[in-house]
Image 1 (cartoon, rainbow, N blue to C red):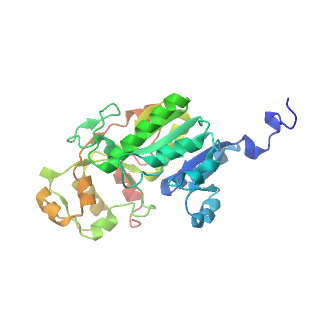
Image 2 (cartoon, rainbow, N blue to C red):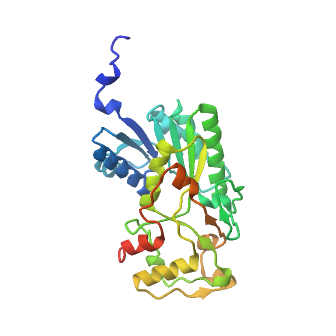
Image 3 (cartoon, rainbow, N blue to C red):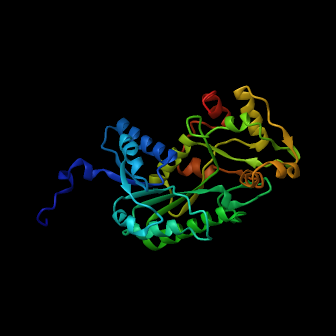
Length: 315
Protein backbone atom coordinates (compact mmCIF):
# COMPACT_ATOMS: atom_id res chain seq x y z
CA UNK A 1 0.00 0.00 0.00
CA UNK A 2 1.40 3.45 -0.88
CA UNK A 3 2.62 5.47 2.10
CA UNK A 4 0.14 7.81 3.80
CA UNK A 5 -2.82 5.97 2.23
CA UNK A 6 -5.39 4.71 4.70
CA UNK A 7 -7.06 1.33 4.18
CA UNK A 8 -10.77 1.95 3.42
CA UNK A 9 -12.00 0.93 6.87
CA UNK A 10 -9.56 3.31 8.57
CA UNK A 11 -10.76 6.43 6.79
CA UNK A 12 -12.52 9.00 8.97
CA UNK A 13 -16.32 8.72 8.78
CA UNK A 14 -16.70 11.99 6.88
CA UNK A 15 -14.62 10.54 4.02
CA UNK A 16 -16.49 7.21 3.94
CA UNK A 17 -19.86 8.89 3.39
CA UNK A 18 -21.27 9.26 -0.09
CA UNK A 19 -21.15 12.89 -1.13
CA UNK A 20 -24.24 14.31 -2.85
CA UNK A 21 -23.98 17.70 -4.53
CA UNK A 22 -27.21 19.66 -5.02
CA UNK A 23 -27.02 22.37 -7.66
CA UNK A 24 -29.93 24.75 -7.22
CA UNK A 25 -30.64 24.02 -3.56
CA UNK A 26 -33.88 25.91 -3.05
CA UNK A 27 -37.04 24.57 -1.46
CA UNK A 28 -37.02 21.20 -3.24
CA UNK A 29 -33.27 20.68 -2.87
CA UNK A 30 -33.53 21.34 0.86
CA UNK A 31 -36.35 18.79 1.11
CA UNK A 32 -34.08 16.25 -0.57
CA UNK A 33 -31.34 17.02 1.95
CA UNK A 34 -33.70 16.58 4.90
CA UNK A 35 -34.93 13.26 3.52
CA UNK A 36 -31.36 12.01 3.04
CA UNK A 37 -30.52 12.93 6.61
CA UNK A 38 -33.70 11.32 7.95
CA UNK A 39 -32.93 8.15 6.01
CA UNK A 40 -29.47 8.02 7.55
CA UNK A 41 -30.95 8.48 11.01
CA UNK A 42 -33.38 5.61 10.52
CA UNK A 43 -30.68 3.28 9.23
CA UNK A 44 -28.17 4.17 11.95
CA UNK A 45 -25.47 4.63 9.30
CA UNK A 46 -23.28 7.55 8.45
CA UNK A 47 -25.49 8.17 5.39
CA UNK A 48 -24.55 10.88 2.97
CA UNK A 49 -22.78 14.18 3.15
CA UNK A 50 -24.85 16.81 1.35
CA UNK A 51 -23.15 19.72 -0.38
CA UNK A 52 -24.90 22.57 -2.19
CA UNK A 53 -23.72 25.06 -4.76
CA UNK A 54 -24.90 28.57 -3.90
CA UNK A 55 -24.16 31.88 -5.55
CA UNK A 56 -25.16 33.87 -2.45
CA UNK A 57 -22.90 34.10 0.62
CA UNK A 58 -25.96 35.18 2.60
CA UNK A 59 -27.51 31.73 2.16
CA UNK A 60 -24.61 29.85 3.68
CA UNK A 61 -25.76 30.06 7.34
CA UNK A 62 -29.24 28.73 6.47
CA UNK A 63 -27.77 25.82 4.52
CA UNK A 64 -25.32 25.02 7.30
CA UNK A 65 -28.19 25.02 9.80
CA UNK A 66 -29.76 22.22 7.72
CA UNK A 67 -26.54 20.19 7.86
CA UNK A 68 -25.63 21.10 4.27
CA UNK A 69 -22.09 22.11 3.33
CA UNK A 70 -22.35 25.22 1.11
CA UNK A 71 -19.98 25.72 -1.82
CA UNK A 72 -19.85 29.25 -3.17
CA UNK A 73 -20.08 29.38 -6.95
CA UNK A 74 -22.15 30.74 -9.80
CA UNK A 75 -23.20 28.84 -12.94
CA UNK A 76 -22.82 32.11 -14.86
CA UNK A 77 -19.12 32.31 -13.92
CA UNK A 78 -17.09 29.28 -15.01
CA UNK A 79 -14.07 30.28 -12.89
CA UNK A 80 -16.12 30.12 -9.71
CA UNK A 81 -16.94 26.44 -10.35
CA UNK A 82 -13.41 25.03 -10.17
CA UNK A 83 -13.90 23.57 -6.71
CA UNK A 84 -16.67 21.28 -8.02
CA UNK A 85 -14.17 19.02 -9.78
CA UNK A 86 -14.58 15.52 -8.35
CA UNK A 87 -16.33 16.87 -5.26
CA UNK A 88 -19.25 14.40 -5.20
CA UNK A 89 -20.14 10.89 -6.33
CA UNK A 90 -23.78 11.85 -7.01
CA UNK A 91 -25.29 15.11 -8.27
CA UNK A 92 -28.80 16.56 -8.33
CA UNK A 93 -29.09 19.41 -10.85
CA UNK A 94 -32.09 21.65 -10.18
CA UNK A 95 -30.76 24.98 -11.45
CA UNK A 96 -32.89 26.59 -14.17
CA UNK A 97 -31.40 27.76 -17.47
CA UNK A 98 -30.74 31.43 -18.04
CA UNK A 99 -33.74 33.46 -19.16
CA UNK A 100 -32.50 34.02 -22.71
CA UNK A 101 -30.93 32.09 -25.56
CA UNK A 102 -31.62 28.77 -27.24
CA UNK A 103 -28.96 26.83 -25.30
CA UNK A 104 -28.64 26.11 -21.60
CA UNK A 105 -25.11 27.40 -21.08
CA UNK A 106 -25.36 26.91 -17.32
CA UNK A 107 -25.64 23.14 -17.73
CA UNK A 108 -22.70 23.20 -20.16
CA UNK A 109 -20.55 25.01 -17.58
CA UNK A 110 -21.59 22.61 -14.81
CA UNK A 111 -20.64 19.54 -16.86
CA UNK A 112 -17.23 20.98 -17.68
CA UNK A 113 -16.66 21.85 -14.02
CA UNK A 114 -17.51 18.41 -12.63
CA UNK A 115 -14.37 16.92 -14.17
CA UNK A 116 -14.30 13.16 -13.52
CA UNK A 117 -17.85 11.98 -14.08
CA UNK A 118 -19.84 11.23 -10.92
CA UNK A 119 -21.58 7.89 -10.57
CA UNK A 120 -25.01 9.43 -11.10
CA UNK A 121 -26.52 12.77 -12.08
CA UNK A 122 -30.25 13.50 -11.74
CA UNK A 123 -31.69 16.50 -13.58
CA UNK A 124 -34.97 18.23 -12.78
CA UNK A 125 -36.50 19.17 -16.12
CA UNK A 126 -40.06 20.23 -16.97
CA UNK A 127 -43.05 18.58 -18.61
CA UNK A 128 -43.21 21.70 -20.77
CA UNK A 129 -40.79 19.93 -23.12
CA UNK A 130 -43.78 17.98 -24.48
CA UNK A 131 -45.61 21.12 -25.58
CA UNK A 132 -49.36 21.04 -26.15
CA UNK A 133 -50.64 17.48 -26.48
CA UNK A 134 -54.33 18.29 -26.82
CA UNK A 135 -55.19 16.55 -23.55
CA UNK A 136 -53.68 13.21 -24.65
CA UNK A 137 -52.04 10.78 -22.25
CA UNK A 138 -48.26 11.24 -22.39
CA UNK A 139 -45.49 8.85 -21.45
CA UNK A 140 -41.73 9.36 -21.66
CA UNK A 141 -41.47 8.06 -25.23
CA UNK A 142 -43.50 10.92 -26.70
CA UNK A 143 -41.63 13.17 -29.13
CA UNK A 144 -40.65 16.53 -27.65
CA UNK A 145 -42.27 19.64 -29.07
CA UNK A 146 -41.57 22.60 -26.76
CA UNK A 147 -43.91 25.49 -27.34
CA UNK A 148 -41.86 28.19 -25.60
CA UNK A 149 -38.23 29.30 -25.60
CA UNK A 150 -38.14 28.48 -21.89
CA UNK A 151 -39.08 24.86 -22.57
CA UNK A 152 -36.70 24.76 -25.52
CA UNK A 153 -33.77 25.52 -23.23
CA UNK A 154 -34.84 22.58 -21.05
CA UNK A 155 -34.78 20.31 -24.10
CA UNK A 156 -31.25 21.52 -24.82
CA UNK A 157 -30.21 20.77 -21.23
CA UNK A 158 -31.67 17.26 -21.44
CA UNK A 159 -29.80 16.58 -24.68
CA UNK A 160 -26.51 17.86 -23.27
CA UNK A 161 -26.84 15.74 -20.15
CA UNK A 162 -27.80 12.51 -21.85
CA UNK A 163 -25.02 12.85 -24.44
CA UNK A 164 -22.53 13.57 -21.65
CA UNK A 165 -23.75 10.52 -19.76
CA UNK A 166 -23.18 8.27 -22.76
CA UNK A 167 -19.67 9.67 -23.30
CA UNK A 168 -18.56 9.66 -19.69
CA UNK A 169 -20.28 6.56 -18.39
CA UNK A 170 -22.16 8.50 -15.74
CA UNK A 171 -25.74 7.39 -15.13
CA UNK A 172 -27.95 10.32 -16.07
CA UNK A 173 -31.63 10.48 -15.22
CA UNK A 174 -33.99 13.22 -16.34
CA UNK A 175 -37.08 13.86 -14.22
CA UNK A 176 -39.78 15.79 -16.05
CA UNK A 177 -41.70 17.80 -13.48
CA UNK A 178 -45.13 19.48 -13.70
CA UNK A 179 -46.62 22.00 -11.26
CA UNK A 180 -45.07 21.69 -7.79
CA UNK A 181 -47.27 22.41 -4.80
CA UNK A 182 -47.10 22.13 -1.00
CA UNK A 183 -48.82 24.06 1.78
CA UNK A 184 -45.44 24.77 3.43
CA UNK A 185 -43.88 26.05 0.18
CA UNK A 186 -43.88 29.78 -0.63
CA UNK A 187 -46.67 30.32 -3.15
CA UNK A 188 -47.18 26.58 -3.06
CA UNK A 189 -50.99 26.45 -3.16
CA UNK A 190 -53.74 28.07 -5.26
CA UNK A 191 -55.02 29.99 -2.23
CA UNK A 192 -53.25 33.25 -3.07
CA UNK A 193 -54.51 33.19 -6.65
CA UNK A 194 -58.04 32.53 -5.45
CA UNK A 195 -57.87 35.44 -3.02
CA UNK A 196 -56.95 37.71 -5.92
CA UNK A 197 -60.08 36.62 -7.75
CA UNK A 198 -58.25 35.74 -10.97
CA UNK A 199 -60.41 33.91 -13.53
CA UNK A 200 -59.87 30.53 -15.16
CA UNK A 201 -60.95 29.14 -18.52
CA UNK A 202 -64.44 27.91 -19.22
CA UNK A 203 -64.77 24.10 -19.62
CA UNK A 204 -64.86 24.26 -23.42
CA UNK A 205 -61.44 25.98 -23.50
CA UNK A 206 -59.87 24.43 -20.43
CA UNK A 207 -56.68 22.33 -20.32
CA UNK A 208 -55.55 19.30 -18.34
CA UNK A 209 -52.87 20.08 -15.78
CA UNK A 210 -50.53 17.89 -13.73
CA UNK A 211 -49.18 18.12 -10.21
CA UNK A 212 -46.65 16.77 -7.74
CA UNK A 213 -46.30 17.53 -4.02
CA UNK A 214 -42.87 18.96 -3.21
CA UNK A 215 -42.15 16.18 -0.71
CA UNK A 216 -43.02 13.49 -3.26
CA UNK A 217 -40.81 15.22 -5.82
CA UNK A 218 -37.93 15.20 -3.33
CA UNK A 219 -38.58 11.50 -2.75
CA UNK A 220 -38.41 10.83 -6.52
CA UNK A 221 -35.17 12.77 -6.89
CA UNK A 222 -33.64 10.86 -4.00
CA UNK A 223 -34.80 7.51 -5.42
CA UNK A 224 -33.38 8.32 -8.86
CA UNK A 225 -29.93 8.88 -7.34
CA UNK A 226 -29.72 5.16 -6.56
CA UNK A 227 -32.46 3.36 -8.50
CA UNK A 228 -32.67 5.15 -11.83
CA UNK A 229 -31.87 3.13 -14.94
CA UNK A 230 -29.02 4.39 -17.15
CA UNK A 231 -29.95 7.39 -19.32
CA UNK A 232 -33.62 7.00 -18.34
CA UNK A 233 -36.34 9.68 -18.35
CA UNK A 234 -39.15 9.74 -15.77
CA UNK A 235 -42.42 11.66 -15.59
CA UNK A 236 -42.82 12.71 -11.96
CA UNK A 237 -46.46 13.40 -11.11
CA UNK A 238 -49.26 12.22 -8.86
CA UNK A 239 -52.49 10.47 -9.88
CA UNK A 240 -54.60 13.62 -10.23
CA UNK A 241 -56.60 13.89 -13.46
CA UNK A 242 -58.14 17.38 -13.48
CA UNK A 243 -58.55 20.28 -15.82
CA UNK A 244 -57.07 23.52 -14.53
CA UNK A 245 -60.38 25.17 -13.75
CA UNK A 246 -61.58 22.12 -11.83
CA UNK A 247 -58.33 22.18 -9.84
CA UNK A 248 -59.05 25.75 -8.73
CA UNK A 249 -62.68 24.90 -7.99
CA UNK A 250 -61.48 22.03 -5.78
CA UNK A 251 -59.05 24.32 -3.98
CA UNK A 252 -61.77 26.93 -3.45
CA UNK A 253 -63.96 24.27 -1.86
CA UNK A 254 -61.14 23.15 0.44
CA UNK A 255 -60.32 26.70 1.51
CA UNK A 256 -63.92 27.87 1.78
CA UNK A 257 -63.43 30.55 -0.89
CA UNK A 258 -65.56 31.56 -3.88
CA UNK A 259 -64.91 29.64 -7.04
CA UNK A 260 -63.10 31.67 -9.72
CA UNK A 261 -64.96 33.17 -12.64
CA UNK A 262 -64.86 31.27 -15.93
CA UNK A 263 -63.89 33.06 -19.13
CA UNK A 264 -63.43 32.13 -22.76
CA UNK A 265 -59.85 31.95 -23.98
CA UNK A 266 -60.33 35.17 -25.91
CA UNK A 267 -61.65 36.96 -22.82
CA UNK A 268 -58.80 35.59 -20.68
CA UNK A 269 -56.24 37.01 -23.11
CA UNK A 270 -57.52 40.49 -22.26
CA UNK A 271 -57.09 40.23 -18.49
CA UNK A 272 -54.37 37.66 -17.66
CA UNK A 273 -50.58 38.14 -17.92
CA UNK A 274 -48.69 36.31 -20.70
CA UNK A 275 -46.89 33.92 -18.35
CA UNK A 276 -50.16 32.73 -16.83
CA UNK A 277 -51.70 32.38 -20.27
CA UNK A 278 -48.78 30.23 -21.41
CA UNK A 279 -49.68 27.63 -18.78
CA UNK A 280 -53.25 27.70 -20.05
CA UNK A 281 -52.15 26.93 -23.60
CA UNK A 282 -50.87 23.38 -23.10
CA UNK A 283 -52.97 20.36 -22.20
CA UNK A 284 -51.68 16.87 -21.38
CA UNK A 285 -52.15 14.02 -18.93
CA UNK A 286 -48.96 12.41 -17.72
CA UNK A 287 -48.38 8.72 -17.14
CA UNK A 288 -46.20 8.01 -14.10
CA UNK A 289 -45.82 4.22 -14.52
CA UNK A 290 -42.02 4.31 -14.82
CA UNK A 291 -41.68 6.38 -11.67
CA UNK A 292 -43.82 3.95 -9.69
CA UNK A 293 -42.31 0.73 -11.02
CA UNK A 294 -38.64 1.56 -11.54
CA UNK A 295 -37.99 4.19 -8.86
CA UNK A 296 -40.46 2.47 -6.49
CA UNK A 297 -41.84 5.80 -5.33
CA UNK A 298 -44.78 5.53 -2.94
CA UNK A 299 -46.61 8.80 -3.09
CA UNK A 300 -47.36 10.35 0.28
CA UNK A 301 -49.90 12.58 -1.46
CA UNK A 302 -51.51 10.55 -4.29
CA UNK A 303 -53.74 13.43 -5.43
CA UNK A 304 -54.02 17.16 -4.85
CA UNK A 305 -57.16 16.55 -2.80
CA UNK A 306 -55.14 14.95 0.01
CA UNK A 307 -52.20 17.31 -0.42
CA UNK A 308 -54.18 20.53 -0.26
CA UNK A 309 -56.58 19.39 2.46
CA UNK A 310 -53.66 18.41 4.70
CA UNK A 311 -52.48 22.01 4.76
CA UNK A 312 -55.85 23.78 4.86
CA UNK A 313 -55.44 27.42 5.82
CA UNK A 314 -51.63 27.42 5.39
CA UNK A 315 -51.35 28.29 1.65
